[in-house]
Image (cartoon, rainbow, N blue to C red):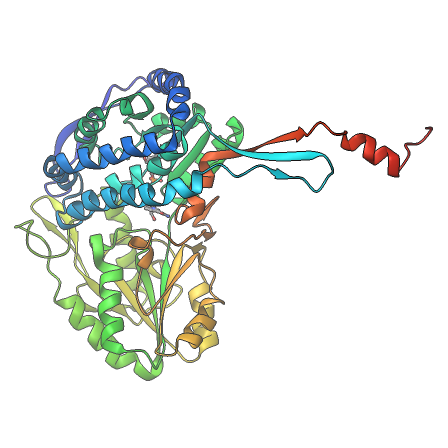
Amino acid sequence: MNDVVSLPSRNPRTGQTDYQMPVFSTDEVAAVARRLRAAQPIWRAQSVDRRLELLSQFAQAIATESEPLTEALTKDTGRRFESVLEVQGVQNTIRRWLNDAPGLLMGDAPRRAATPNVIIEQHKRPYALAGIISPWNFPLILSLIDAIPALAVGCAVLIKPSEATPRFVPVLQRAIDRVPGLADVLAFVTGAGPTGEAVIRNSDVVCFTGSVRTGRRVGQLAAEVFVPVHLELGGKDPAIVCADADIAHAARALTWGSMVNAGQTCMSIERCYVDRKIYQPFVAALSAEVDALRHSYPDITCGQIGPIIAEVQIPVVKRHLEDAYAKGARAVTGGKVLELGGGSWCEPTVLVDVNHDMAILNEETFAAILPVMPFDDEDEAVRLANSTDFGLSACIFSRDIDRAKGIAARLEAGAISINDAALTSMVHDAAKQSFKYSGLGGSRMGTPSLQRFYRQQAFLINDGSASPWWFASAVAPMAGS
Ligand code: NAD
């Protein structure tokens, strides 16, 4: 039983508690789930076109609420630029599904089975209730990225966002309420781990985005409840910069790929391996790019680097830096976590003289820090890039695309950007699955995304001429006949 009624939320810019988040008890989550389940058959019975029309209205309602929504997300996360991107990005996600879903959800024409006298009809049966549990680094996008395809398929959706960033929820609720009937099949419940566990216990399919540690627990619980689970977990994405790379271009792309959202993205580049032949000029170009970045403090509309969003992450970042320095690492730019106005801000940092004994090369840091290490040949680059428990994504820079593709084929990661970094943050129409501890289950991206939310059901229709059983017994008489 979970009897906490509210939890305080810390503002990442001030370090102060300035919001109380309602906590849904396990009974309250069960009641919301029952309400959604009761409405789902009506939602499912509507045509795909009608469901998509309502999702189109949802995109419009989000546009109408875009200013207060951006404001709330900015309070949640302490950064403004990425909050604007999130509000635009979620509307783009909805529009992409409006475009793609009709063709993908169209019923298949009946066909003849290979077995005589049988016609096959394939049907897509949505799960009644999809449970979604999301993290704090992109609170809006990551709470809706799986909800939109699930709703398009015909599921009802129950979302538990991160307890670190709950302020956007009441504003988004206003957008949901503007769309007729949408609130009947789409609901948010706020709270921490126990509320998340209640979501799993009441769902028919679970999509979880978060850390490996919690992902394991979620996977175990889903197995106990006996529902499928799709896990999108952490990363320690490597970059490989070959000797023939365009150094200036690679330095710019990797600055973006490692520093956007102050490094707090799952597909952030957290390790950079550079051919020794260009190591010095590359480090100089990268440091110059990173050195030009500024904290968006005190003016939130200036600069590029926001605060560390989640309080729990602050000691992790500090520990990784201290451990790296104790083992010989050196910052060529940045290098510290600063306390500004009550918040904690990681300086945009490039580290050299690093090695794989350091936590910063092995564990997810989730901060604006890029450690850079030289390699001597392609085999060593691949070995270093693969020497991790994670396998989310990676990137390779080389003017020789065939060479880059050859390296990509040897990397153990779900998406490889070539001559760019972290492209999965923008390119959502390429299917990919995680390797190693970075996740489990179907692809969130690309058209297979929809398949996570329905089961294939087959109608096998005897066409009335004769049963295949009679045909089979005619060619192979049963024993004793
Ligand atoms: P987290 O695992 O701490 O929490 C994620 C969510 O799980 C939160 O909503 C939390 O309340 C909930 N939760 C906690 N305990 C639970 C339990 N026992 N049962 C059910 N739910 C529970 O992760 P976080 O710190 O919020 O997010 C950061 C992590 O998310 C990083 O590791 C990052 O790489 C990862 N991430 C992955 C992706 C991806 O697509 N692969 C995207 C964004 C973030």
